[in-house]
Amino acid sequence: MAGPDETESNRLSAVYDVTAKAWNAGRSDTDDHLAVDGRVLEMLSEHTCQGWLEGYLLTGRHGVFSSYEAFVHIVDSMVSQHAMWLKTVNRLDWRRPIPSLNYLLTSHVWRQDHNGFSHQDPGFIDHVVNKKAEVVRVCLPPDTNTLLSTMDHCLRTRNYVNVVVAGKQPQPNWLDWDAAALHRARGIGVWDFASNDGGEPDVVMACAGDVPTLETLAAVDLLREHLPQLAVVRRSANPASRARHQLRRGPPRGPRLALEPAGLIARKTNGYRRVCPLCGPSKRRYCDEHHTRSARAADGTRKRPREPRSGRPGHREPGRRYPSR
Image 1: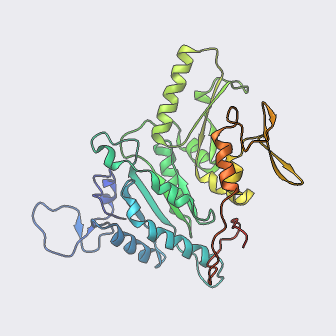
Image 2: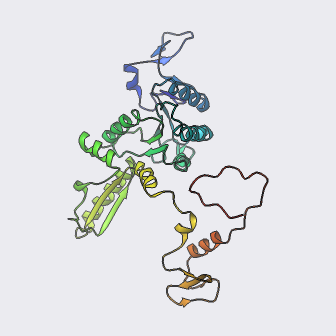
Image 3: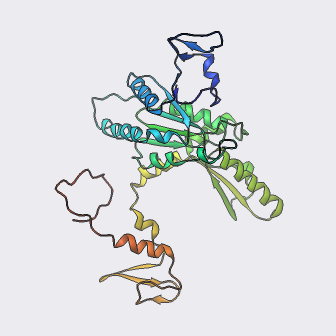
């Protein structure tokens, strides 16, 4: 286990029941949990911890990188290189699989009661999910049992970058061990104990993660109190399923698909014609009264200037759309 923060501060001190901190220098009477052969590496240098762990994984052994969510950004470039390396070695028959690179982010954006704004930055997830779905997984378990099942799974995988986000503060346990293992394997599930829809919901409450789960269940409780006639179904998602869906359906088409509202663009033989759902075809570039900002954004993405030609085309990711030259 490597990390730039104190292991006890991250509430992972139970690891000292089986090992200690690696230390081969002088000691004092107040020192605790130190050993020459310790397997816990602490140093206030994210780059050093990342390098230690990557080298350790190459020996075929398993490890975990624990850090605060806001500060793990320091190794963004290193995790990018490791993900690209994994993508390459997955296509080499002679390269044996290695244990996955596991990140455990224990101090997340939701609970910074004393640290405040400087410790709130969930952007590492954005950075990781931009990588190929074949090598990255992001998990936000809703409770302790699901976290244990998730870590058990991650430590068994190979050739992945696994990011697990779980707060270090005490939280309720919503699922027993069997239900948690099933929820982790499925990636998404309906929690019957928090639902009263009978199969025909009026409202679907969906979330992922420990604190969002707590807040969502609190919202469900308020709905039951103030709107008892409302049929509510509560769904919990494991974001690792996002990677599964991407592998199943292929990469997304790009920003134009996400920005065009339904019924707004009609394809014609002579190009694109703007059609307002309320006032019909418009000769103007867009209808000030009815067209949304999304339509203008879609229009902007469609008419991007071509990239300038260069002597070196550079690397092109498979499945990504590039401007024609």
